[in-house]
Length: 495
Ligand code: NAP
Image 1 (cartoon, rainbow, N blue to C red):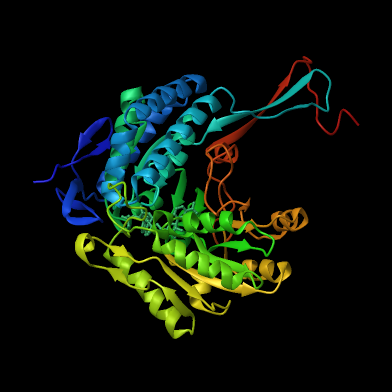
Image 2 (cartoon, rainbow, N blue to C red; image 1 turned 180 degrees about the horizontal axis):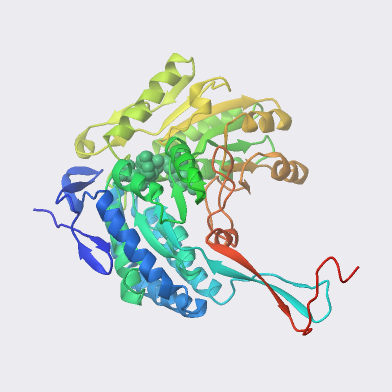
């Protein structure tokens, strides 16, 4: 019998009100049940929100540097547990150990960064237009934060959201993805061990339809931060918007790497292998389109196909493997569906295009790294997010066409260009419609102290990471202090 894990609500570990459980299975070996988790309902969310509201009243008064000190301790605990966390993450969502260690490290970095922000939380002062009067503004917490996260970065994304929320003085109700509840549970354990008071953090496991919807619609939740698909993001935005909640949405992507004729091809090859097939293509910043200058197109495709032969797809716990499984059966079907669409649209399948079921692959959701050439902007495989190891190659005549093709996209998360021409590099920085542009690096590689997020339908203008996320989790209070000892009427007595 697999271990039963619990919700954490109002300072207590507890089962769901439904008394039901769901399984968390290893995508590299579906016979392994990693754990059983509570299949919660709206009533569990109601209790969590009530507890979070009560705890908020005290937590908001704890000085921010003291809140930061707790996060520093939590970061230290996570350093101690890094390897265990990475191994469990690989077991529950498949990416190879090198990558899950990176995911945990991103969490650690975010802890230490948030801890320091507890000593800053800067706001503005400005001179008054009156004599003997002082104008200040302060960052205040907002209240109860509802956090809903996806499975592809099971530690980094929950940390990106919960740590700024906490250091700003909010309390949290957290629903992690159903595919990665174990990493999320361990994060909460670490926060509690470090000293986060009961009620300030609550985790409610369960499906998006039941638990996610209950969080979004709960009238006593003040803000929602969601990372996931554009389809769910739209629904959340309209429901939460109707209640005038503050909403941050980080959604889909269809990121492209451009390689110009003057680019370092060996470097660009390393970049695209990492960008397209790392995390089995299941990153919001994954390289899904490769835009190649016609002068190097054929040579680069040859180099790419040869390099792909060197990738080893398999269980991410084994050091010899470089690409893990897809997350679940549904995602195998989605990816394969797009491969069929690509073929029917007339793109040329150069490698992959099928599930791997031989030998050690037999009990997991493995898919062969796949490349299409001859892709054109009208095709669905060019336009739609696939979220798997499928790369669409587009040939262009020159830099201007590369930018045009890049921008012909409803999403705008990450972008990359390989070139030695400083003028084209700078033009790309200016003209690529994306929240992030890498020059001579792949489309992936975020650092926690830099703003992260996209333009167009990738989100609604907020950022995770960096300074802007602290603005999202705080509200400005403006204060005027008059020490003149008389009534001073602004705009009247001074003119
Ligand atoms: P998803 O299906 O939208 O799920 C994301 C989260 O929302 C999960 O916790 C899910 O719960 C929950 N959810 C589902 N339906 C809901 C509803 N109606 N109301 C409230 N919550 C609901 O996305 P995913 O498959 O986990 O993640 C992949 C997507 O995330 C991709 O599109 C990817 O590009 C995007 N992503 C974006 C970023 C970014 O920063 N821009 C980063 C990572 C991923 P269950 O797990 O229980 O279904």
